[in-house]
Image 1: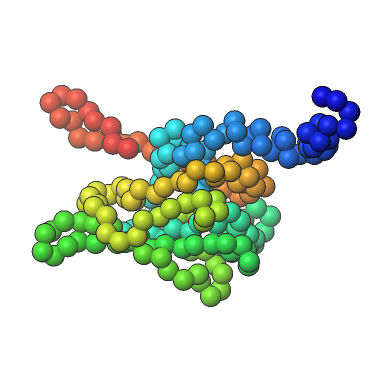
Image 2 (image 1 turned 90 degrees about the vertical axis):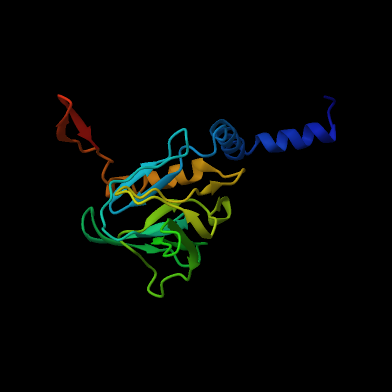
Length: 203
């Protein structure tokens, strides 16, 4: 490139901002599977979506109703040291909340999820039993209305979609500051009754 070349000048100017280049490189390396690596929290647990885009939590409440909070920032209301009383939404940060309730259709006797968007709480407090997805609301699509459901103890929520262009690394770096407030996901197993001489294991 010759001296004074406009393209060369623009390229050199870009190189003077390594933070931007590093950010774009990290984004490119992490966007191969946009459904994996998305952090979410529930009842004191922190988890991340797997390669299939699925996230698991141990069920900690009896109701067949779940609140889904989508925001990229939450603030802990701390009692002592690392003990969190509850989480608060950050004023001014884009946030969306959805209510998902499993219901029974009286006519068909089929179960379904009723999903609808609800207003933000006036006190800004996040429900203890809400699932919080650490992401910008503009990057997540939550279909509303009725969705087919089953009547099993484990609640399988309706499919939630991740839009292209989501920058997972941003929420990953943010979650590092909050990680010490959460517990890891653990699996519990218990033996079931013997059937045909074999003992099954129930998760």
